[in-house]
Image (cartoon, rainbow, N blue to C red; front, side, top):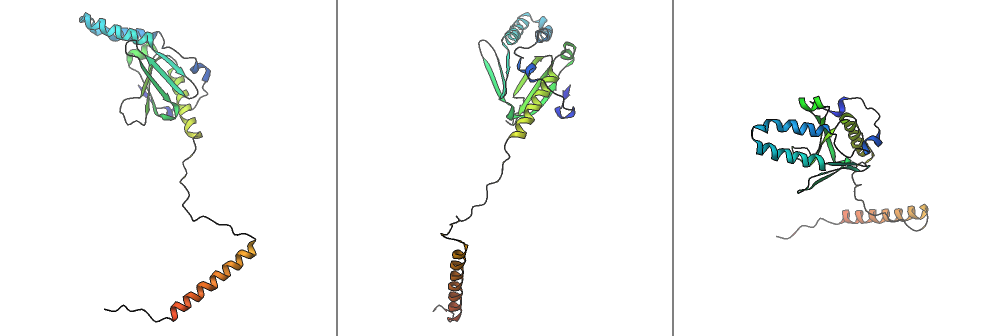
Length: 197
């Protein structure tokens, strides 16, 4: 199941409920166990994958604040992803049959990094639609309040304000105009210059 956030009408989102999310729901551990069932035929592989999922589930932490999302997990190899709302380009809800049965969905967040894989995948949240709407509102809010990029004004010659008032400026401009007219008449009266071969 994939959902596009633009396809639903906007609903008021309680920010405090999202800010309170710190850990995945216990149903995520049940999902991880069900994912390990096919590996039971190879006990060492099932044990290894089960331990990896156990450590991931028990160390996964989320922090939502006014600026963005912080997600971290791992014991030996700690991973931490910090994502500002302004970087979010796309949000998808993805769930398979087992996840739907457990009431879960993964929220995949993509940025403009150019990667085909999501920058962050939030999993183990029962209120996934509410969280998706919250993230979408934050993403749009950041974009709407960001200052629009205006092109720089074309470079012009600096304006020098003349001392005095407009009458003095007009007099100076008339004098410059008379000078330019006299120069043009003088140049027109001269014979054309022909270079010698």
